[in-house]
Image 1 (cartoon, helix red, strand yellow):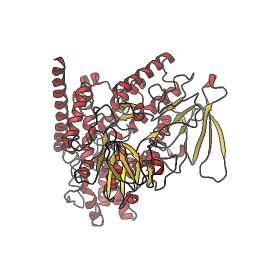
Image 2 (tube, helix red, strand yellow; image 1 turned 60 degrees about the vertical axis):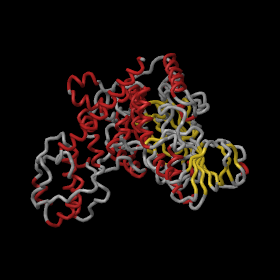
Image 3 (cartoon, rainbow, N blue to C red; image 1 turned 135 degrees about the horizontal axis):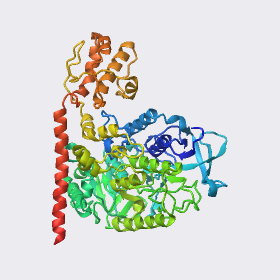
Length: 630
């Protein structure tokens, strides 16, 4: 790798980790700079706040399911929750970094001050990157040249604080949602939340448990969607399928609105917006309807002005307030990049497919993660990173400047016609559409027509089932077909496994694992290294370590279903004695419903969900096509 191109990566959050791995996959040498002392970025929860750095609040749970937010070649462990709290998300990132050995390429506590073209940029496309030590008392600056730069610093950096008449004389406490961590500051207070996005509603729900009164002020309202869909499966797994997005947009929007209205009447609860469900980013929350119906959260219109101790709304009503939280979003900008290279104006910039500045002679600067999709952000950052590294390496190329500018203008016009005017909707797109668009550039978009000829059942699963990120590892550069296929086929099973927390004990004999219905042998050491055990089961004594090894065998039997395995008799004889039986019995409950034990039940449930989703999409599509003819 000594002769490889060096790529500077700014940030070690989800996007930065994906960028490091993409560089390694393409034989490039990544050099990552992270201003904090650990990975995770936004998902690295801290109790303190800094003016230019955002992190999640303590109660934050990711809105997308684990199957839809996973990196394409690293599934989330089956025992992780379906929708993960922030600590599980961070743990997943740490597992990802450890699995692919990414940490040695990260320079922690290094802040990037400037990124500018090198003196010979027109000939080489190289960049000068200046960094300094973040935690040192003495200023230490260093400038180096790199063959490429991948900016992975995110866009939740600079809080947007709108001005309201009279807010300067308001005597209460005013904060931005970026500063919120725990609801302690709301105890026995009268709280007003401004905004109705995801963070606003989450904070309102938190406050309603401890505050005297909680109000939410919204200009337009919002469509509120539950994380949980039919049969208890994650809603995004059922909605983000190729079958669903093959329907007319009007019918898809109608379905989303009916699903939201089925949960609760948006008109009656005072939150229904004037725009359609797909004309703005929906708000994801499960608890808001229950807090409204119990009177713990009250909806109010837009603010007219503040007084010293109260807030007056546009409808003339007035409330007293002790704490005001502005959950009003963020500005994004790149202070370390000159405006001649990348200009941001009114939260809008001109990037080819949200990644490349089109006017540069050499496409060696890529912006990763600067897109707001209705779906998970991590797979988007990963596929963008795969594309950028291939461009820097020279395996792929960009079209002419004219073609890129035309694409940018077309996207801006599409956004202005599809979405309601808002600073939040300058980066908006649909998840599957955008993923396919970038996959086309790489050459890794699944070829469903060919797949239907070769393996109709698997092709149907890819079309009607959730479009999990592993689909983009089935073909093309970086393909890992067998593992990707297994991930696609096991998507619903992994969700079911996360709920297997109340199982009956399984009897285990000393020399026989009766719950394993196949024989397993030839477990290779590399396979053992890939196994991940629950944090609660970490052996310290010799007996516990031996028991842990056996549990690795059990987990291998579950995860490596595509492999030919038989009884590992030597390990069984050594470890299955009475000293280990209690420990093993305690850990075996989670395996009762594994595919090795109950394949018919799992397959039938998955087939039922897929059939339900497919029939629903076909029926609604046919209905709307018929109506639109008249």
